[in-house]
Length: 106
Image 1 (cartoon, rainbow, N blue to C red):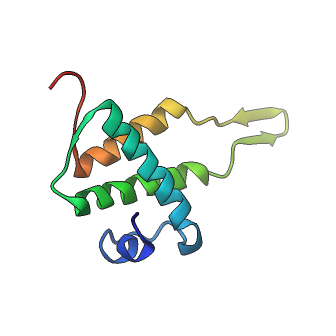
Image 2 (tube, rainbow, N blue to C red; image 1 turned 45 degrees about the vertical axis):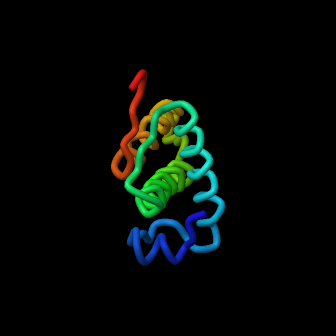
Image 3 (cartoon, helix red, strand yellow; image 1 turned 135 degrees about the horizontal axis):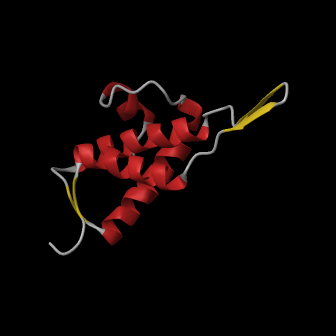
């Protein structure tokens, strides 16, 4: 499990508050575990996996805290929806920065 000290000092992250980091990092770790079940994932070691988890955790945190989902101004109504497939793609891309992930037969 990646700890907050690693996130701040090695990854140089600052977006996620300390009190919520462990929960978001655990979720990112579960997603990486799923990637390993579905794809062929290779890394240069534990630090690369920890960096990938931090990057994915930041994406999850930003997605969770987007804030405004709809607005009404006079007779105009706007709704913002996040496409879950966009989040999945973003998490995959964040993990690929630090890990070699191969789809299909390898």
